[in-house]
Length: 170
Image 1 (tube, rainbow, N blue to C red):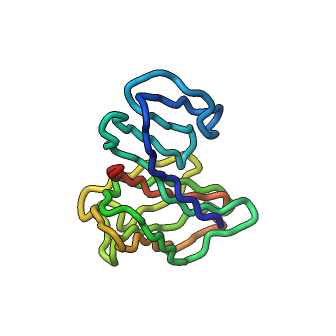
Image 2: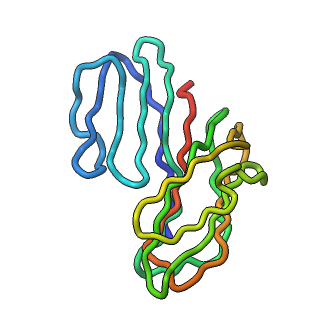
Image 3: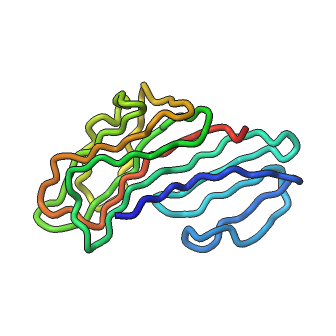
């Protein structure tokens, strides 16, 4: 499994926009504009909008747990330390491949409390599925963000679970 944290802070010195590179790669060109905007294309991408004159704005990023084709998803707990003063989990993206009708269940928690809408998400298809969080989804500095994987069935492989997180830049 591979852990991915996709979020970053930016210091904007002018009004700039960045265009994403091909197929989810890092930004490749600078364009004149009023905001800094990043949006790679992948299941675990990030979008950032920052007002260059004030330095304020929001970042939507994701923390992900991934399994490649050589790893089988098993029951486990994954913890993500979150560095921001406050944040909101807005949803979860997930998919799995494998054999024998692969599936597993994921619960997302902030500081040990289930996130409403994400407390028992069934991951069973190979298509990116987005599940919205509907409550108990805000955290603050030093709150542990946790994914609890349970009830694997079949042989789930080539899977990912990404929590979509929004936070302010400053």
